[in-house]
Image (cartoon, rainbow, N blue to C red):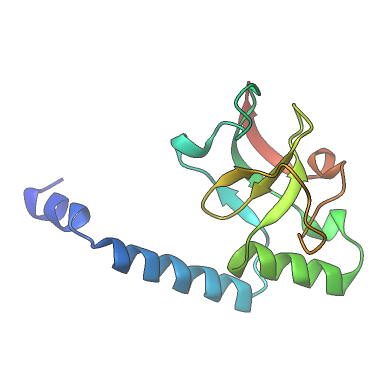
Length: 130
């Protein structure tokens, strides 16, 4: 890679990156794109410290998990432009908020959260280790 290209790649201001990510997420929501994600290395581990599962990518296959079309559309909207989807970790069984950018611990479930059924991981395609 040339020095000029490297310089361009390293000098993208954080606000520009954030804007482009927001635009991408909005475009995916408008197209009703499937809920899929590939996490970068710092986000691989389960956010619960004593869990050893590392999920590197997920295709949730919401169309196979959720039969109600309106509920599925709400989940897709929460995935692409909202807080993400809440589901139990397949290993430690504690709740995790999965989003396009990160995974977070969910100590208690909020009644407004887009929560997947406990067997979501039996249908979803995951690339994981641990």
